[in-house]
Image (cartoon, rainbow, N blue to C red; front, side, top):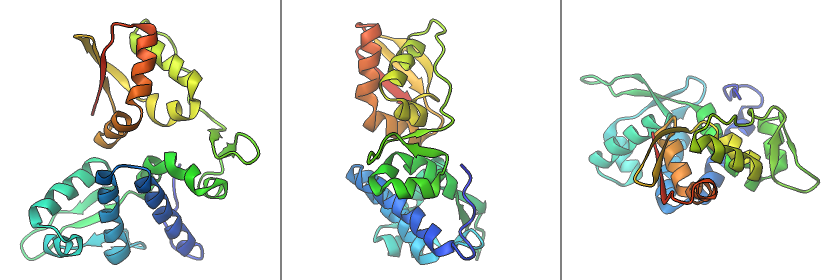
Length: 227
């Protein structure tokens, strides 16, 4: 899904949609993710230039806005860049602060699991390629779902088939891109495309993944998700 930059006649409503997705996503997570999302929302609402896709703000200003020290700002901005929400457009130099952009499409994709918490109208507005499963339900199924997993003899491929059958939406959104990268000491290691993706699966889907793995191989005791 590619989001048109929120400018023009529908700019205001599209900006609210992005902020609503971030809010709903944060409220469904633990306090650490809530704080991180609140911080980037503070940057968006106070200093982000939507039309030019530019955030120009020094570390000291950000520290004051967030009520933290400069070290916390440096660490948090690095995390936001690593997960793809912030994009460094121009490195700061003497007398000039760094310029960042916002990957709004990435934010929406990462917050997609929380869209049903807002409502079907929100889902239809942001992604018309999704339709409700049934009248009054909030789950959605893509019209063009990802391909069903194909068994290649690995434990993870067999577990993917189980996970896809149990919950096709979660499998399509989060699990189909994971790749088995190790299996030793009764622990399976899965590689995710980004740190944010790995953290989300580890925090929200680990038990489900481990359950599917143990149905196939009861000797599995743990699963690690890395980026």
